[in-house]
Length: 65
Image (cartoon, rainbow, N blue to C red; front, side):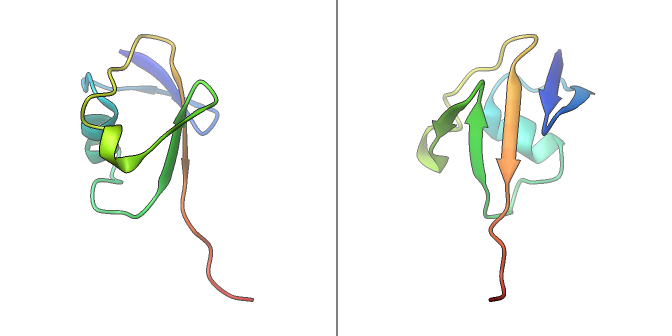
């Protein structure tokens, strides 16, 4: 399936957001996620299905100050 991740085109075999995060290397990371501009909480990622062409944003918290 072809999706866009943080503005970059990617091919994934995953069908859910949780599986896509694992496939893309963010499986264990503490991140915020959105699909097509809508926030997806961590508790909903396993049931959030992906469709061809979805735009996913993955944001990691920043440290420092």
